[in-house]
Image 1 (cartoon, rainbow, N blue to C red):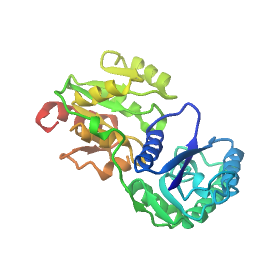
Image 2 (cartoon, rainbow, N blue to C red):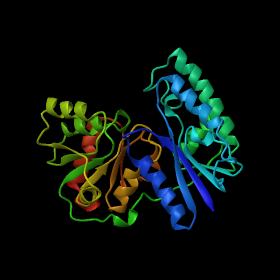
Image 3 (cartoon, rainbow, N blue to C red):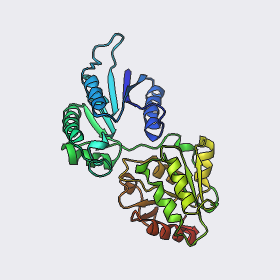
Image 4 (cartoon, rainbow, N blue to C red):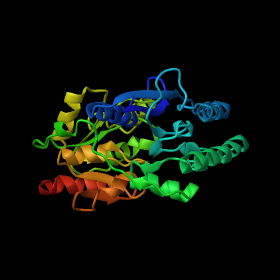
Length: 315
């Protein structure tokens, strides 16, 4: 069978989404299917760029191609699910969040964005309602789709890539936060929590992103250079080691879709500290059994980290 997987492409950005789409392509190929990953160039701004991307996908008909047409199209992201094909399945990672749950919250409301919001929601409702099958990659994504578009998606969960490589080793007394350094991930919460710790636990932040300089400045301003390590990028082998030797893993993003970090921590047999508003991780973390759930406040997080340090048997 010939399969086309569609997703977005933002140059020089690589994270869980890119690993997910490549993992799906690899799985199709391993099952013997001829598979292509077709990525649609995407820019979040200006608004006209988003509208152009929607129009491009709406006008692209994969039933008729210059070469052999695909037997199946699987779309993962906005606006690729607007592409036309008679056998089109959607496994939704997330929608265009700036006009959904982030609108008026982290993204300021403007007249032009309000108009774009109406057009995107209409585009999504129309395109997704036509899908042969509609899946979501987490319960949280399915909840949002029901809330905003009135559509029902089946949550289809999956293990993170290279799940078999994770392992557990003796704790070296640090809390790990591996994630892209951006506002929605909220590394600043854990940095500020470090200023309230009573235990000697250290903090390790892995990853790159646009907030790296700001986070480094915050660490210095709080005098936490000897407490918080901003490690940056590391290869997979080193990342696995950081997971293996952690006391616990912190993952407290703002309303995350899914978040591989939670699953990766559990594959390494590490408890996860998350927040009451973190979305996806809440489907997996059971308070004081597989981790801790606390308010998104530095002092509350510090109390939980100290609790983990005082009760190593729970980690």
